[in-house]
Length: 410
Image 1 (cartoon, helix red, strand yellow):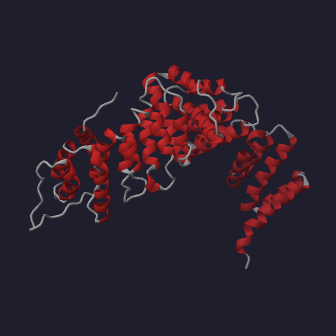
Image 2 (cartoon, rainbow, N blue to C red):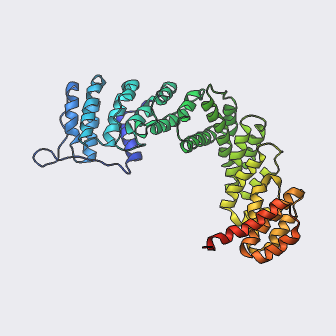
Image 3 (cartoon, rainbow, N blue to C red):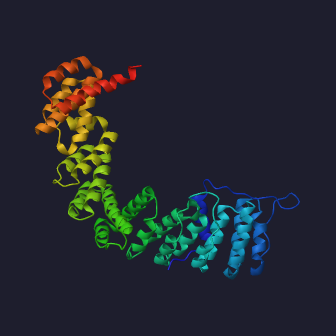
């Protein structure tokens, strides 16, 4: 069982979250700084809290609050909570106080502390809920996870802060339990937050337990009950592939191959392709290009190309010119040849003419004509007269010139 002293929690959280805090105190009656009260009986603690929170020095205020909580029976926690809510309205409660009182109550009764939060003044920051879950989740992860699922999606209700605390506790558990309650927490997060959480879990497990142990755990996760949780499961498989890229691209490729014929397969391939191409564009594109034909292959190539061209633009363009246009990358080649022909029509047409399939070759030649038409309509029109393109494609090429000149007409 994990045990922590209130003082230890205060020091750790104060160090971790001190940046950006707004601490507030007020002068004591008579103009001087307030000082810590003498040790107080439990039934007087809520009233002593008001005097403590008026202490001007954050360090003295924290020491006094720790002493008060050490000497106060949690049986009066509800009265303490009501006093804090009252003082919050007056602006006297800072995040340090919220954390300390929440941790004091959660050590004794996390369920009750969770049910009586002191809501924050800022969205997406909820020190009370975060602290309660940090203490509760290591002791009873399932109960904590199901409690978090009961929170609404309102930013001020602490769902995001609580989810982070559940994740942090979950990855330290040994053995790892069935993640269905955890997935229930994550399914309600925004997509970016959910993806980040799942990637963090996968990376942490690989770092602490190794690749094979992590993959064995992921393989053993059964299909969850709801469609949403099932989607989280699929995304976890995909994010595991991304985590493998940090250490070994061949392991990520092997993970994708292992699941190629499973429902998780397309998602794994798309994620691995995108993030691999950010790291190494050419190897990622070559891998995606060489994959067996499947309904998802065109999308996998597109995902790899997006990140390759954004991160390594010159090399990405060189990669395209080294091979004939492919039906799976029709849209990519069409845009590339169109842009290439604006500066070098001969190069654009030469690449288009390397296309093997006749119908695709006509499409690529039309793309070159479109780019050419926007910069030199006279030369492009002369070429079009001899190009023998299908009528619909010839019309597309002529329209490119008309679209280009339209803004100049009045």
